[in-house]
Image (cartoon, rainbow, N blue to C red; front, top):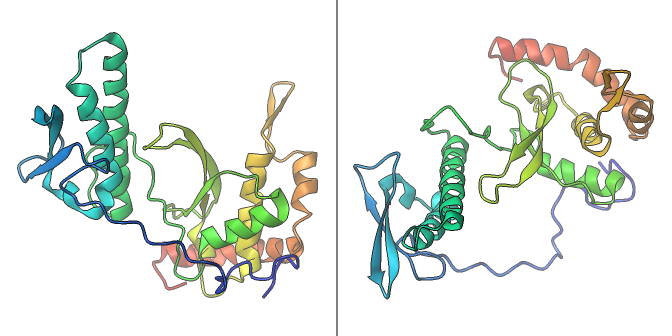
Amino acid sequence: MNLFGMQLDLFGNNADAPQEPAKPKVPASVSQNGLVHFKYNTQLKKSIRCKGGVLFGHPEVILPAYMKDPEFAPARELAAEWAEHAVRRKTAKNKAIIKDLVSRFWTLVEQILADRGDESLSSKGRLPPIKPQGKYHNLNDVLAAINSTYFEDKLTCRITWSNRVGGLSFHSVRQDPVTGEEFHLISISRGYDAANCPEYAVAGVVYHECLHIAIPVEVKNGRRIVHGRNFRRRERQYIYYDEWIQWHNHVLPQNIRKMRRHAEL
């Protein structure tokens, strides 16, 4: 189904699109620039170590053994950057950089563990698993279509299926574990990832949450106005607004009840 008219293939793949060449894989024993070597220790779990002057003055990093897996490649690069600073003179500026890199490294490690479904190292500073691919719907495809059709591809955010069973979709501001920058995260109720949920309904709730990013909360007379007049006007511009609201009000609650009983959606 072509939901938005202006797009030829909003939710499929373009077979004619040129394929990007595969990037060469970097071995787990060395950093991307080839200057920092990695070794792995099965005894380590929540700590990393650094030895200076191993290769032409560049350091060697000892990491927990589980970080040898390919998913941890971005974390290893942060560890390499940390090690390069750790062997330098401890100026105030360098100490601040080291502290920031350590924080970003462990935040990213926690995120990778969460995305893999592994046990957390700590309960603090961790993003929820960001998993846009559901059983029936891929949220990245839906978000791309909504962004292109209604926001001129200017909206910057990430999207995931929510882990909450309560049924609510929501938007929050999080911190990127790699760059340290804040970003918008849209979490969609898993009640929408069901066999009985049409794509226009998923697109409707994604559009609604995107509007929360495009139209910030107003404060009038000390009151926070989340769904103001402008928000409601923009919301009704969604082409399948009525159909989405009908599904949201009548079918979603049934799906949520099934979720709570651990029944198949």
